[in-house]
Each structure stands twice: as C-alpha cells, then as structure tokens.
Length: 391
Image (cartoon, rainbow, N blue to C red):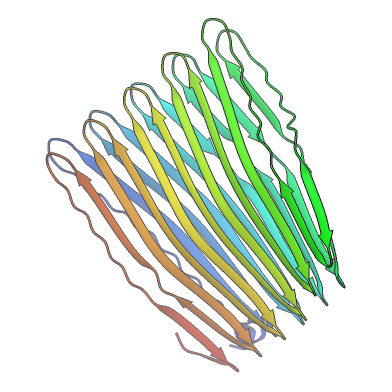
C-alpha cells in the first residue's frame, strides 16, 4: 500500500471479445478482437493517461468475399507539472479492404505526433505526419506511395505570432510492364497579412498530376484545397485548418476510385496561463472497384479538449464513428456506432476517471437474414481523494 500511495493509483483494463455469427446458405462470419489497456497514475500533481488499442475486424460473405482489417495503436499522454501542459498523441492505423475478382488493396499507415506546451504565456504547436497510401489492382497494377513530412510551429510571445511550415512531398507511381516514375513539386501560394494585432494565413494549392503509359494507361488526378488561418488578438491564438483532398487513380481494365475528404479544425487559445486545444476532424473514405463493388465509408467525429487553469487538467474525448461495408450480389452491412466519453481531471491531488461507452453492432445479410445487436453499457469510476480509493 505504501508503494501504491507513493507512485499513485493505477487502473488497468484488459478486454478480449470475440463475436461470431453464421447463417446457412449465404454464410457470414464476423470476428472482432479487441485488446485495450488503460493506465492512469497520479504522483504529486501529475497525471499520465496511456491508452493502447488493438482491434481487428473481419467480415466475409460466400460468393464475393470481403476482408476488412483495421489495426489501431494509439497512445495519449497528458501530464501537468506546475502550470505546464504537454499532450502527445501517436496513432498508428492500418486499413485493408480486398474483394475477390478484381482485387483492391488499400493500405494506410499514418503516424502523427502533436505536441502542445504552455510555459508562462507562450504556445508551441508541432505536428509531424508521415503517411503512406498504397492502392493496387490485379491485371495492370498501380502503386501510389505518398510520404509527407510537415512541421508546423506556432509561438506566441507577448503579442507576436510566428508560423513556420516545412513540407517535403515525394510521390511515386509505377505500372507493371512499362514503369513510370512521377515526382511532384507542388506550387503553393501563401499570404500573410497583419492588421493591428491579427494575422491571417491562407494557402490554396490546386495541383493536377497526370501520367500515361502506352498499353496500360494510368491517370492520376489530385485536387487539394487547404486553408489555414491563424489570428492573434491580445494573447490568444486561434488556428483553423480546413483541407479537402480528392485522389483518383484509374487503370485501363479494372478502375479504382479513391476519394478522401477531410475537414479538420484545430483551435488553440492562450489566455493568461490557460491552454485550450479543440480538434474536430471529419473524414470520409470511399473505395470502389469496377465489377464487384466495394464501398467503405468511415465517418469519425472526435472532439478533444484540453484546458489548464492554475494546476487543473481536464481531458474530454467524444468520438462518434460509423462504419459501413457493402458488397454487391450478397450484400453485407456492418454498422458500428460507438460513443465514448473519457474525462480525467486533476485538482490538487484528486483523480477522477469516468468512461461511458455505448456501442451498437448490427450485421444483416439479404436472403437469409442475420441480425446481431450488441449494446454494452459500462461505467468505470475511480476517485482518489487524499489516499482513499473506491472502484
């Protein structure tokens, strides 16, 4: 007990669930495996929250087979020492979708780090992203690799704002038979205007890239529109980012269409010694293959708020996600709607962790119908006041 009181309280949750549903005739197999660990420790006045998730989702139907594999590993750490806040997030996700006949393979591996620190009245926001996207089609194969490394720094000292952005993109596209190498150097326009104490930065880039090969033709078109605005008024900083990108890649024979639409807003404000960070991403991803069609639509909506006032830390996360997967012929519909809230607050030496997940899962097959509905509602509360623990 003495060691637990010195190092703080630790909460560890490990879940492993498997779900299988099968029907005679058109068979449906749904397997879900989750492993989650959550640890929260208190030492003095610091809070460290680490969350590690590994989820696998597989859904297959006889006839046209569909395999969807999703693996996420995320770590979130938030610590408070004195009056400084450090938030580090490292998600690693892989998404694969394949259909028999003309096969489609989509692999996405983003690695992002976001750091926000407050010391006195200065704000530093650094974002580092590395993403790889690969799409291949049997017959004439298409390989698209995108590697972007961006750094964004925004600092406030007194009433001055400094925003620095450095990007290095590399794009390569190859076709079996005759090889094609495409290297893109985009042309961007950046405007910075100062009026009184406000700063507005707007960037609009519209690149078009086309590469064609005799025999098997390849057409790659990319249209991105991004706007970034950063304003300073007194001692507050507001950063808003809105990006809409469309990527289309088609090959003669079996065509692949990949459409990606993201709208993200990031706001970080500093008032006195408090920091508030709010992020609202909305993303849609669609992938279709001629012949047997595959539609993958992901709509996550997440809000993350981190505020520091004196020595208190409040972390609130609200995620709402919908995932739908349908296959022509024997249709499969998988709908997932989790709603989770996580709150961690520190005031003095008390820790309150509250988790309320609500999930619904439905799987239906035309012909012989299968309905799988799961509604778990769990609440976990662990308050710490002085040295007492109640779970």
